[in-house]
Length: 460
Image 1: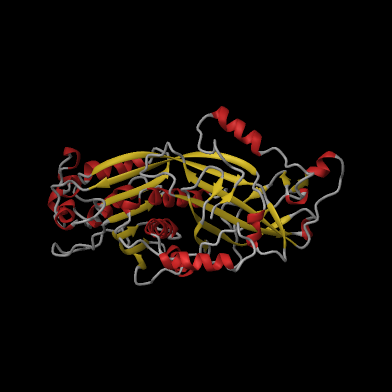
Image 2: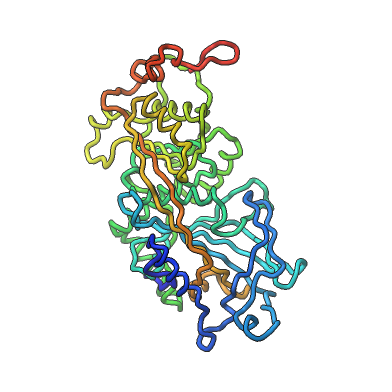
């Protein structure tokens, strides 16, 4: 069952005039004669939000009700209240993907009153929550909840969030999740995420594709659970789809990899919180920046899909990343022989904000490793809503009874870079086939075969 939402047609419009009209309509204060004005606050300002999630400095005066704006100096009583902020992310129809509307991602954070700093001050509490929702709904509706996770962002026990819709790293992860959900054929076979960081891009991307698959095929058991849950609640319009950790049946394994020990620890923690099968998802250190000594008879495990989310690498990191991708991505020749009902060829996928530094990676993949490289564009729509307030005694599910008012509407351009092997490449023959390895890169001769180390030796 879907629920009405205050954002509707025009959310995906690229027209400034339409957007201005939409914002004007959404920002109109509610009719105080029919709706309790205590549920609607006008956000004045937030003085400082630290991007590292370690600190948050709220303003001394965050809220003002419509009543006090018009006639009174009375301030809202936040004592005994829980305060929430939510942001919704989705791809616009102009995004170059298979199905832009498959999934919507909600980001949700929580605050408590901070009386030590003032009666209208608040402080962040608890973890950041990411929620995958069905995006195939009518305009003006919020889709059913597929999956929810309280993410682990820091090893510090005291760390918390920095507000919803304000963290560029989280935004980049969400953009990658939306891309994968919009191109579900990418998720099959053995999948690897390099430079995984928190591990969320690959993890939530695979979970999202699994949720879509369950929706399409109509999982009878989940439907029965949802109906039973709906019968046991007095709020018939509240979302009742049970949370799921189902991965797509096409996925054999997901490996989340990084070279940073802290990143691997956080990725493992998020895998645990997500309750996915450990037999299907693993966390592994792959030091791709360092060329390991390998015999000519040994090749690394090949993967059908390799994912990278917002890896901001220039030379020489881009060169080593390209080498890792070329060495570990399945060859087209192997895939052609066994593909059967396989949906897509082996592919490398990188999603990042639209910026020039991917040119290094693109050049090394195309010129250095003879891969077929394509780029595309994504328009990420981010809708940040105003704070919502509930009494501490009320469950968080009661948020669904409150209408959402828009604080900010933003569109951010991202780009995707995909690469597949040359059809002539055979698995394990990179030493002889890749121009970067056989000395033919840019016709520069053998000096480009390998980069010399500081001691004069060469490493793979």
